[in-house]
Image (cartoon, rainbow, N blue to C red; front, side, top):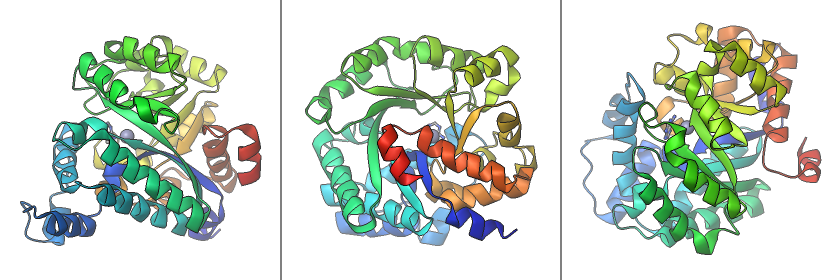
Length: 326
Ligand code: ADE
Ligand code: ZN
């Protein structure tokens, strides 16, 4: 069958997308010029050439540096619209986007500038493309619990427009339990909860995300497959995993796409989804992720349809909204 056309024609939602990771080098240059910032790269090509990573931290270092060009509400609005334009071209109907407020507030950009810009982009995407979206505030796990609490406080005026909290950045050495209290506080404010777990970290971190953070979804979850009791638990609970194939390849979580665990996840009855994570850095948006992993591990049309369906049933849309989009 025509894989590209089949994937393009599936209604899809994206559940694991860091908006700062959708900053393409072209827009990075434009924002640098607009804001009077000198980039340490001579050209778009030189930036792309620097995107060779051997692990998560390698990537994070360059990703946080790139985010430095984002200064104004308009910058965040433009960033969001650039992403939604790509999602629309891929046939995406809904997105739940992560943002990392601490990356910006720590360099003096007010929380409101970030949130107002992203929310304006989300509203424009709904009007122009009919794409719905939700916002998930991620705490940077390499920073301490106190900083996460300060971020939750800064978000207070926006909590009616923020759907959930997440946990990202350097995983190993920063277990979910470090953020148990701030996740509890977020839950008490009515926020849903997700966490990156089992990307580089061990299966124990996935157990902690489930039992101590009480998450509604697991982001990545790859290393869950090392623990049969854990995969049984995830399957029984119908826990959604937001899997990111091209990210896994570029960050050396898998050595080759033929070794990607997605097919095994489906065969174990896990509720997996396909996502792009940081598409500007990993070389492909939503459909490119579907196609790459489908070729790598040999997914059937039924598998692809299941993955696309899971992206809606695993989303934070209510049942009626899901039914309208399927
Ligand atoms: N921040 C952006 N992308 C990330 C990833 N794949 N893992 C952890 N933190 C991230
Ligand atoms: Zn991620």
